[in-house]
Each structure stands twice: as C-alpha cells, then as structure tokens.
Image (tube, rainbow, N blue to C red; front, side):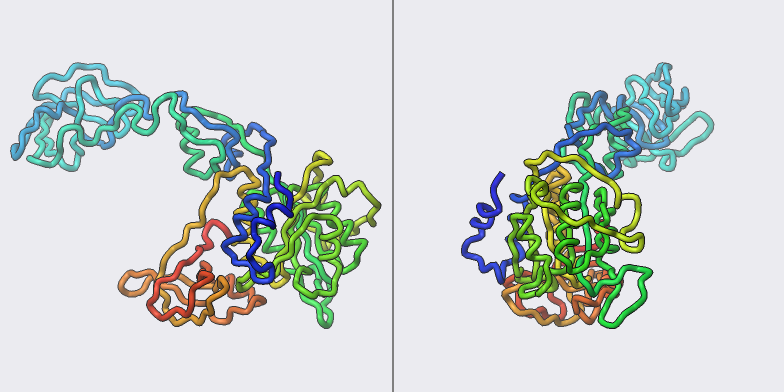
Length: 455
C-alpha cells in the first residue's frame, strides 16, 4: 500500500490550493483498499451487495428450446416465399410440460409461451397472425420466416459459463439472473461501515432551541441518506463541538468502529477551529483546495488504528438528540495495523452533497469491492446561457426535461449558492462544466450527472 506521501507525490506539478477536480478520483483510487471479509446471504437479502466470487451457471438458460409466443409451432421448411401455408392442429403444448406426440408434414401444434418446442419443430407463428378454422390454421404469406419466435437452449447462458463476475453490484436484474440459475444464496463482501459526524459550535441538533448565529444540522441527514442509498452500514456520531478533547474522542471512536470516516465542516483554509489540527494529529492527511464550485476545501487521508492506542481521549458524550438510530452503538474489530479512510468535507450543505457524489461515492464503491463504475453523463441542450470561467470544474444544479420537439434540455435552478439546499431538491441532476470549459450559450450541449439512483 502506498503512503499518503507517495500518492501525493504523484500529484506534483499541481497546486494543492487549486487542484483540478479530475485528478482527485485517481488519487482516491490509490488511497482506498477494498474490504475482503465475505459472508453468504440468501438471495432475497443480497440486493445492493457486492459479489465476492464469480457465479458460474450450473445449468443452461433456457434449459430447452421453447416458444417465445403464444401461437402454432411447425416445421419452417414448409414455408414458401409469397405463398400462404395451411396446417392441421394435432395437439397443444403447454408451458411446464413437454408435448410428446408426433407431428407430420402439413401439421402443427398449438403452443403457449415458454412451452418446450416439440421434437422436429423449429418455427412459431403468433396466434394473432394465423387464421383459424376448426383444426385448420392458415398462415398468411410472408408473416414469419424459418426459425422465428423460437428460443434456443442456452440462448441466455450455457452451463459452465460465467453468469456474473466478482465485484458485481447486485442490482434487481442480477438477482433475477441468479434466481434463474436455481441458486438460493451467494457469497458477498460484507457491508462497508462508515462513521460520520458534523463539527462546529454553531451547529444545532434537531430538538434544540434556536439561538442567534446557529443553524440546524442538515449535513448528517443528507450524508445518512447518501450512505444508506449506497448500501453502507452507517454509524452516526452526531454533532461534535469545536473542543479538542471531544473532537479527538470522535475521531478515535469513528476510526475504531468504521472502515471510513466522514466529517463535514472545519477543513477550510485559515479556519480557527480544531478539526484540521486533530486530523493532522491522528491521521496522515492532505488538505486541498480543489478547483471546483461548489466544494473547494476537502481533506482526505488515513487514520492509522495503531495511533488510537496512544494516549487517552475524553469520552464522547452524544445526546439522544444528536445521534440517531441503533447504528450509533455498533462496533467492529479491526487489526491494529489497519487504517480508516478519512474524508473531510466542506460545511456548506450543497458542497457536501456535490463532493460526496463527485469523489466520496466512487471511493466508497471501490472500498465495497465493486468493479469500477464510470460516471454516466447525459447530454442535454442548455436552455439558457451559463457564465463559466476556465480553470475550475463547476457543478450547477439543473432540471432536465424534454422540449416540444422531444429534445433533452436542461436549465439551472437559479441561485447556485452552496448553502441553497432547496435547489438540490428542485434539481434532478448536476450540470458538469469541465475545468477548461468557458461560457455556455443557449442551445450548447452540456453534460449532466443525473441524481436517479444516487440520491
């Protein structure tokens, strides 16, 4: 494993006070090591988990040739171009049971979708195309060709073929695929544990009375939602004031219990609070001013668990109003020579969400053991001019829709202040304007990171 210094050295030539956003994920990919602990789960409990091993199909899917339609099965060699074909029905093949009769020339079998194709038959005419008169069926000219509407044995998967690979994030379609193989349970990597807390004397927990200069904590709730949607095991350590002893206790508890630690607030350049000092004391950390908007200040690094046994820290007192849910009490056991990954996010609510989506989410997916998943961007025409200076990446909240001509368009939500959390509710994606990009004219195509599935 590379040290923070080695990884940071790879960024030489970049100004840590203006680090291009597109270099951050490469750094984080080197920083994060995937979890390795494995557990076996019933398939119904495996949604959103990461496969710990390849799944090899024990059977062929489908296990036999079958009909893709309700209709009439026959030998397709009897078809002649431009001519109708009349056949006599000699039986019915139902799904779930093979039809064992014989079918001669000029004959066919009525067949249901999914039913095994009778021996020697290779083509199905859908019932809506056929003209039926008693036991006679006329197939009009040119409505089907030889082999139409027949599913072949192993068309989806052949026995012995890899159905899913290690690192697959088990989405609903993957669960269905595994079930189609008759597999009841799967080996998956354990859930990633993430501890998080907000910092600052100005932060109020829900239930506390308002006071001048203070704001209610929203970051813990958005981070909780983002982590839960990602499938992490969350450990909420509440709000920690700007007190060195309590900050030390919070970092120690977080690193002892979790694979990753997320904080919000206290990482801006020149801030007078104690968060940055405690990060430096307990961890190997780099502090960046990323050339992006919103976001900019961010701290990333590791907290060596070997340091957690040195010195004593005050007990962290978290009131019921501050911490939430049973996950606040969960514990874990880690080797003393291991590390917890640290993400120190800015304090503004929108900046927290943007930096999470752009940087933390991809890093946590790697920590989960998932195969790399490149961010998919949608391209839409800007419905308005957007001012943009080259030299930083901007993530503007946008609303994607279709215009009267059916084209995808996107407009901003208006005020792009990093404290305007209501705009994240209005938006359905982030307009991503690249580092070197300048002003956008109305009608120009822009890239949009859609929220669906992430938040």
